[in-house]
Amino acid sequence: MLLAGMTAVWALSGMSPARAQAELDGDARLSCEAVLCLASGTRPDACAASLARYFGINLRKFGDTLRARANFLSICPIVSTSPQLRSLVQATVEGAGRCDAAWLNANHRYMRSDGEAVSAYISNQIPDHCTSYLGNEYTQSGDLAPKYVGVPDRGGYWVSAQEFVNAQADYEARISQDGAAQGVR
Image (cartoon, rainbow, N blue to C red; front, side, top):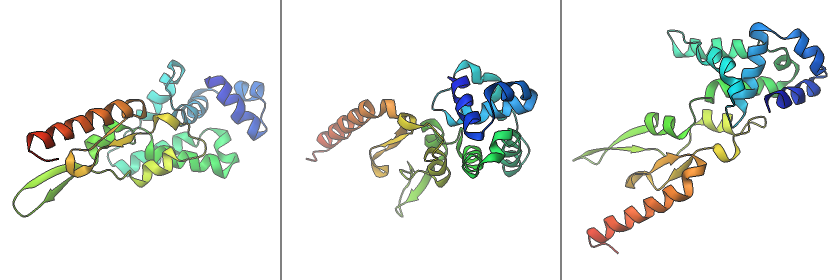
């Protein structure tokens, strides 16, 4: 799958796969593989080395980390051939690893006060960086994009698309039971 994706990108760039494979090694090869792996909705074993290299870039300031990761992905010679691929790199840097259900549930929490009590909730608004990443024409998030279950005021949360139907049914059953226990119809 990874080789097929790289072949398609090479074909779009006008570079033959044989020539590209002969020319790419080291960080250039890892960079190109990372671009494809991060745009894919799945993470095959073939992605392990390139993703380890990409996510291994961690600097003191988060903004510096994002710039360094973008620079790494831009090493791939194909990235410079198209504005769409440059856009993909930027969207990837901003969203990859920060747009799944687990990240959103852990990092998209807010506090609300009604004057007497303070409560926490998970926002149902997907952040702009996720919209950019998941909506990029080259990302293949498809059915993997997170979905929100319920409503923020009643314990809503994010789940993966595969879990959505069951999670929504469980949520509705819980809300219905809570309402019945409180005598609400």
